[in-house]
Image 1 (cartoon, rainbow, N blue to C red):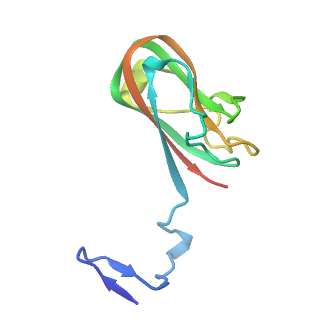
Image 2: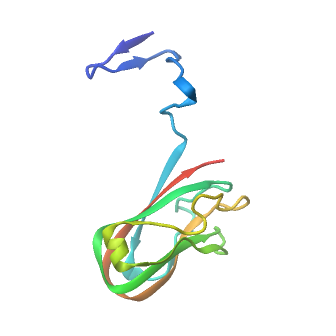
Image 3: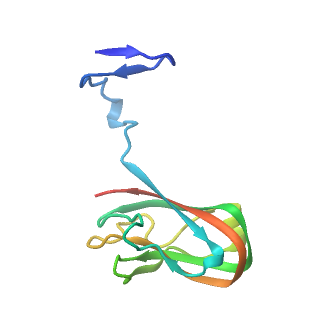
Length: 150
């Protein structure tokens, strides 16, 4: 049984299935998002503590974008990749190699080697700020990762 809500949208209930999408296209995407807040003043830091979010083993990394929440100042660049829970490097610059301060402040689409691939088939992948060049005096960026679990 279905009904129309106050916004005029059809709501399916009790296991109702809507009309299948044409040509195999559906709005029910498998794309998930992970957001990590990166404080530029903290220097190199790994986000691989037990409570930190990670990409499960076998995950396909669709995209990564750096968006400033507070303008970065004073430093030169930031390199971001992945490590295992034990701290072993998966790929130190797999997300982005040396994104400049200006690029991050403008919003930067990352282009590391892990983007468009399965990050690690055997290990969960934790974000790692592997290198910070220069001395950042201010700035926080949101790293927005889109991925598909295996």
